[in-house]
Image 1: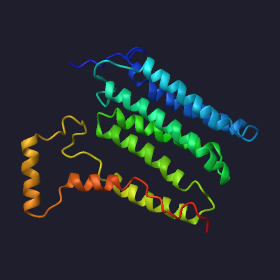
Image 2: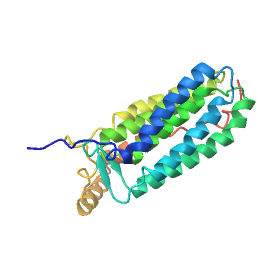
Image 3: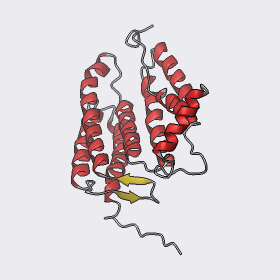
Image 4: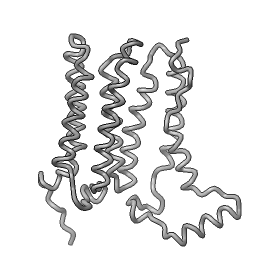
Length: 235
């Protein structure tokens, strides 16, 4: 008889970066709602503080020396995941610092931008530690839904609204290609042996057939937003 493992605070430490970031998003959202009108620079400053503390928590408490599985093997933490999360913290912090002048110049300095940025970062974290296609799906949707809103963030731009709508349609189509085949959603169990994979691709090339997995990857890549060079111009 299988027993359900008891979750303790120590066993959940590898997932602490995601839990902290989710709590930080809630704090930032509430702070912007109640104090955003009086303190215009509260959101960007608080966001950077959340990122710095999050990087410290990830390096100090979320760091693991070996592979750890959590939540019914749907979440995996390992040294590579920790490194990628720290790298993501750094990239988003630099991006937000460089985007502040752009937002101020166009009158788009609003707290929603920083809430969406942290939500997209949370989606990246979920995908980094995903060990199940369901977890991958949750991470992709967190990232994509935030990017939909960020593409259309300039409310006065018709090009931004059009780009967000096209991006949303492509993302909705791509979402249908993620569910697993044969009822299996675990990433490791879906791995195809190397020899069988080569044989499958040779057969597909011989009959000019595109494998389903390749088509799915192509549609997933379509979820990356492509911004028009005219995006900065106003109609």
